[in-house]
Length: 304
Image: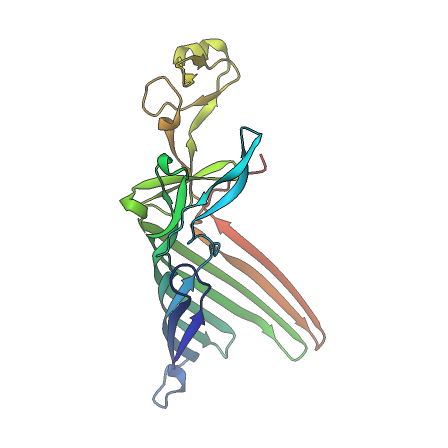
C-alpha cells in the first residue's frame, strides 16, 4: 500500500498535484491450505492509481502578446494567446486486476491483466470566435475512457545445465472513447502533418478524417458522366477529368467540398503484442529474437 504525492508544474492558479496509488497482491500458492496440483505458482493482484498530466506549455494559462509584422512592413505586437487561469492538471483514474501462474515445474508461465481508466479534466483545445483574433485556447473541457487487457505466455522448452530454450508471446487490446469535449461540442478537427484527425464524442481518439476515394477516372466520358466539380469562393466550378481521382460525393450535390469528408481510418489496433525466443548457452552466451506486431490499425503516410 502506498500513497504518492507529485509536485506539479504550475499551469493555472495551483502549483501542486496529489495522485494516490494503491496496490495489493495475494500469492495463493503460498497459503498452507493450497492443494492445486500442477500449478506451482498462483498470484492475484489488484490496484488503483491516479496519474496527473500537465503536458502543455507553462504559458498557456496566461494572456500575452507576441512581436510581428503586419502588411510585411509595420512592426508591432499582436495577441499571442488568451489565457485560462482556471487551467489545471488532467487526471487519469485507473483500475487494474490480474492473475499470474506457473505450471509444470515453472516451465509454463501465464499472465493476464485487465485495466479500465477514465481521464477527466482532459487538456483540450477549445475553439474561439474569430472576433477574439485567436483560433483556440486550452481548457479542461474533455473526458476520455479507456478499457483493455494484455496477456503474456512463456514456455521453457529445454532447461538443462548448459542449454535453455524459451518461447514467449503477448497479446493486448484496448478500446478508448471520447466522452466529452469543450463547450459541449460533438466534434472538431485538428490538422497534423498535412492530414486531418477528428475528435468526436462517442468515437475513439485520433480517427483519420478526409475524402473517400473510388479509383481514378479512366477517360473524359466517365468524368463527364459523374459531373463532379470543385467550387471556389466566387462560385466558379472546376470539373474533374480523365486521370483525376474519383472522390465519393457523400451528399450528392455534385460538388466535392468539406461536407463530403468522412472518417477514413482508425489508428487504434485490434490487437498488438510481441513474439520472442531466447537461447542460453552455457554461462556466457545469450541469443534473443524479438518481434513486435500490431494488427488492424490504419497508418497515415505523412511523408507523402
